[in-house]
View 1 (cartoon, rainbow over the protein chains, first blue to last red):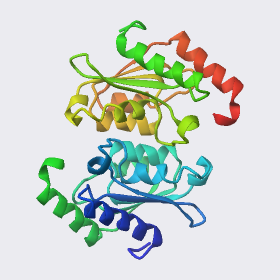
View 2 (view 1 turned 30 degrees about the vertical axis):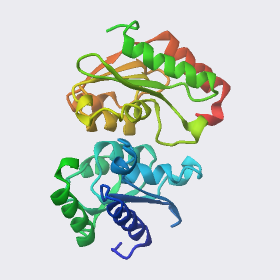
View 3 (view 1 turned 60 degrees about the vertical axis):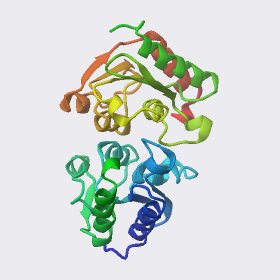
View 4 (view 1 turned 135 degrees about the horizontal axis):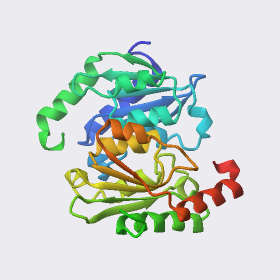
Length: 143
Length: 143
């Protein structure tokens, strides 16, 4: 597992796309147990005013043409440590692993995931960190 | 707290509307600490193919014209005991109470909510139970 993993790169592209749109730079990707990228997505709070389309939930929603069973034992990638809703989604959809870009800007529900038997990998990725740091610095009213 | 509570009745109407549409009969409502119904919603798996618009998350999403702070210390109503994602949403949005129509057809994350200081009320409501029982009986492939 590294920062050159296709699933991670897809999530990072989504985060960058959200930043380019003026949005919260959090991206996600859901990858099947066989390695297929099922869906990717980004936070839509600024863009659509959505309160539930975070990077991770957007990725699941954009994978909705697949049967729910396709998520089972898959890997969820997220550029930022997941909030309680998104961690709950990982449990609900029965993923096996969650790969997190960074957890310096938000310490999410990693222990909750582990308690549910989900492997957690934290990449401490500089690009993810910088996207969030820039956002928090420049748009503190949105954080 | 009773089955004649406006927030609960709004959630139940959403569940009935979903049943009328052929969908999963789960409805939700989010009510502010001052008693204002901020949003209501229903499961959209059948109607829109959505995997993240459950009764509860739909209610939050349909309340998105309100500031996030409006959800704090509010009450989330749901006709069915919440899944991990929806229980996580209740924690994320900092509600004070979750009122559940029934938990016979799905035993949701009630203990998780209590662990986060959220009051949980279970109504054991017959109408909610019957809606879900009918759905599971008649559409087992969707459950």
